[in-house]
Length: 278
Image 1 (cartoon, rainbow, N blue to C red):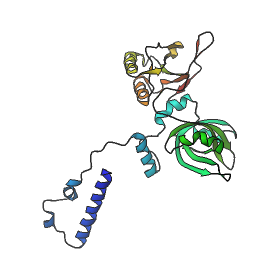
Image 2: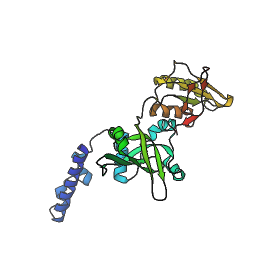
Image 3: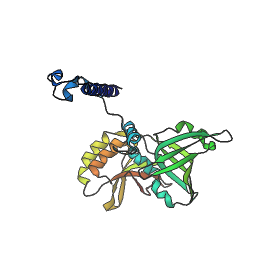
Image 4: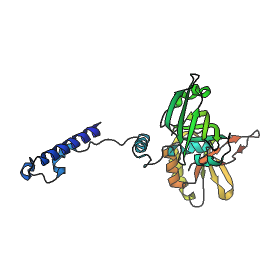
């Protein structure tokens, strides 16, 4: 509000300055010591305001320019989306009609409506870094998801794909609002790959992880030796975009991710594959 007030003041001054100039009521003598407009507007310095929160800033960029500049709203959620096995929207062009899909992105163009039978439903556009998809929430699921549907929220959803020559959309069957910080889905642990190139940073890595205590278990993977080591309970971490970024800066961008972890009937752990965060 302060910034808008300052802008209004500047525009008002500029308009008055122009009107007086056109009437010939302004001369060099009237300006006194002033030599340019900057000298005439010293009392309208921009206020020292904090930057908008990232999601608010990105929303303003999209509303004003039609695209994002600073980043993409789902960037900080990529580890959660990867862990849930989401598919990029762009990859659905060749998917068969009726396929069960897992998607993640930001809600835009949210509309709520009423069917001919008087039942509530909604539809919105889901956007990720690769494209956009129209999502329909039919009455049978609307009551479950109504409180979760809000523009600019980042969500994970499951649904059935309608993909034919006339239309391409998804009928939502399950929907979850994601938080940028928190524990990963049940059964997932954080994996860090140790290679000859980043092995010398283990002490720095340990100190970094110790600064982010939490509930998520940690696995160190040694691809060169084909071994994975489950770290003890003394070093569990709190997953957050900040932590992932710091680990990537130290160990490498492709060296950190999430893996599905489970204990079999014989007490042995089973690690079928990684879910990359990039």
